[in-house]
Length: 615
Image 1 (tube, rainbow, N blue to C red):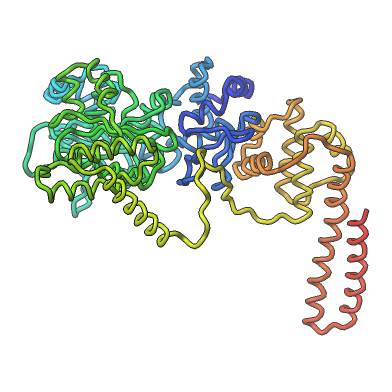
Image 2: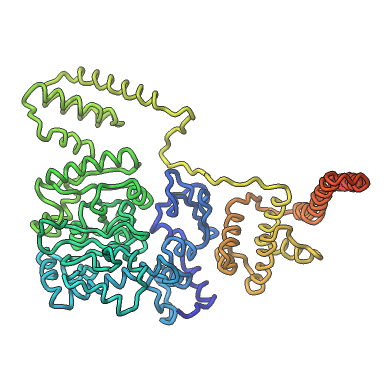
């Protein structure tokens, strides 16, 4: 890839609001001057990830990561700097010369992860080619067409076919791919002799992409039923693929989720693909297993609302119940259930009734979780008997105890009283007892530490464990911040003879800033971090920007105080440490004359230090 000139990079940066880019991955909410959300780089339940639109930077107060818009994409999607620039340019509709776009679409291959991703991308292309361009792929293509998928949909999802001839291993052998990488990819099965053979055969292949849109694994569906084979076969767990974390279609659905303000969770890949073809593009699915807390966390970063749309048959209903229980325990999402006619799945419903009816169903069939749970508890119950009615009511009341809205609660109690001919006051009394029992149980389980009171907005908390700063380092940080942001302070500091920061990192940043200001009249944090390049120093600058609390106005006395600490106090402190170490050594050696001399020098230095502090 050709080196992108600085003026082109700056054009891309100034055309972009970092909040718009980050907002595609993280649900951001205003808090004070900045925007906050759940950090995409680690799991957390209270927001500590901050985006500053004024400075065009991000910073997580918990894990410490920070940078500009390019750094965000580099960290999150594991791409190179030029690739990040191209991605941001495309997002902001900035035209770039074709020379800067060369090889920007593929993952970086300078790491083991990048090489494994490249293997999966090549495998996906081979499987797709076999499906759409070869005679051996025709039966699988016919199957997908019969399922109602168009060629455009097949192309969008890069669906493929793994034939019985096991062509993948010879394909990589021709390219002299590394044997150890092939072993670790999950694409092959290894026998006792160390020989590799294709894991997937006679299966329609669904590429499973990570949040960055790169193929990380596959799921293969048998083309013809076989009693000794599972219907769906997923790649094994690898360094790329963790089925408890990955959500099918999340990379493609994310913009639609942000636009719609909600996500629809389907049960299978075909349901998601079918929904997308019908124009419903905010659908996702878990990896053939029950929903996990990691997947819930990924959704929470993106939206507040989730609709569960599983199959209408008995297994599907049980899966909805499990999902609602997990979501109720581990999320703050606003939940709804989309209830399908019994026995149908979303894909079958679309094919039977058409795209428009499918889209309308996703709205009209939406119901609150409680309504679903009450109906679910009725299944397989003989409610004409008193014992079954009583058992049903006893199961429903703990659910009603969680209802916060008085009108909603009164409505459900009224429905129960009417249907089962129970006195409403008796129901209300029993409900209050359930609520008291629940409150007592929660009190027994309450942790000893006080819990914060709930609020409408998620609290913004700072978790980062910061090491305490001494007087010298506080002065250095404040002076560095001032001189970067104020040209008068910069001019004064550069005019001080023999000035240097005591700590090497601050001195290096100061030296780099001298080069930066030769070509830039105005300091911009987002721009300066690219100029620095070294990751450790970039993070230090971001930390400086986000944690230094300075008043807007600067006074000459303030700068003089910082200089006094750095240039006068710091050398004295260093000499004191040196003399005290020498005194310890003289004491160890029993050198009385040297001890007396060092004590005198230490007293003099202590006096000098006190005098400096009083100036």
